[in-house]
Image (cartoon, rainbow over all chains, first blue to last red; front, top):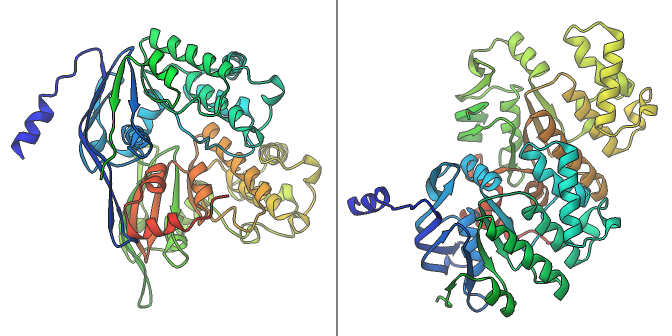
Length: 243
Length: 255
């Protein structure tokens, strides 16, 4: 008990450190399947500094997406600690209340997930500029910035005013990327952001990622594209299949 | 940030049926709190307690209004009535429960203001038109009665009528059930936008987990009158911890 507390108090968080995970475990207990236990993540340690691109690698089923979900607070920790620099303080994720986690997601962490969960009838333009409106930008400026990133991502102009539910997989994914990259947040999580994009678009996303790294954003990503992994990664954490 | 409502250990019995048992949680200003659970789990009773429509048998509900602390158990009928008229509004599943079906749409929206003492005709008309516009009801429908409206439009009219008094909290009991999907999407879109723009606090009861995912910041899962589990919406839906929540989430058909 005492030892645990000591570790917590003495955690060294150097000024360029953004995130640190210590001995993180996640076990799912399926109550309706005879309480079957699935160990998704076991004793994971990682840290992320400003301007770093940490790539999670490992075979499918090794728990790469689970790691991102744990770091984002979607999955609740079974044991271990996650510390994240949020504004001027260090937030410990499992001790944070829901509103602190919401603030963390709004101000500190951008997340490109594999799905786009937005209200069906909202246009692509509104879906993305909404992110900027929440952080206090004026409507006109928010729309300008949104159009800029749409142009960068080569999202056809005729789609801007349509709801993304009717888009192709690649178009949806670019809206999802735009929603994250349009704002400046210190940390970005990417879960296969280029999975349904063509070569040309992958290049664009790659250069957007480099731009962010230059601005000292820390990125943790899952990429299935080997070239992308090699060119972007400044650090690799490989996960093995757990039992 | 401080909560706008605190529910402290409330219980509600109907005869020997325990509809709510030791329920505690907080509601935060500007959030959308979803309440999910099977029918009979106490969701609607909870809404009735929060709106003051029925009183709890045990426990306390505290409403923090500006700098005032209002204890529900200490309110007399008159003050509770005023609270329900102005600050805490309910949107019912069936629009006819919250509307006057034989009054015009305009009158339906203006009536709450009239009952709060407003007598300026032009102001009433302006506000009615404003809220019709916000809820995407064409101005040409001002003088029509809701009996001739579609289900989705009736529901939007009910919301307009609820919002005209500028309430702090909107309690919605299954507002989208019974609407077809495109109409439901429109209603969700309207609700989502309004909450962001006017800093409204919303509690929404729904059995549709898709609606919950899109709209709610946090979820409370009810089971047999108790809170089975609560947390951020994605925590509950993607990492359900309670046996019942796991059953609920795994029972959903993915569209």
